[in-house]
Length: 129
Image (cartoon, rainbow, N blue to C red; front, side):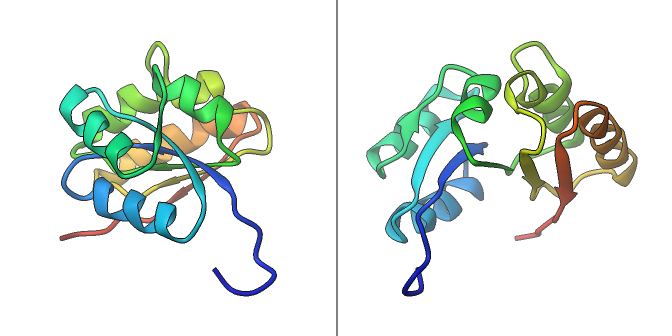
């Protein structure tokens, strides 16, 4: 962090091969991270790096000032945001969600539309690796 930057509490959903190093860098920079992953081993590895464990995507979203998702496929993103216990159940109006998954653009638009109806801001920022 730069001098004067305040640490944030970041919800991070998807702590596998791509997400875990990103999460680790956020922790190293002094941010509080609350993590969730459907794969318990991936979530346990994230907690070993200093993240707090959330019980669901919605629980993580409730606790974070910002939500970051890094998931392996379009179906994972749809479930993580729109499914039962999903991010949009926990995110309050005004919350910013950044999806870094490389997925079908139509899924990103569908999630963005659903988020917008709840007053949640959504940015798709896909990465490849």
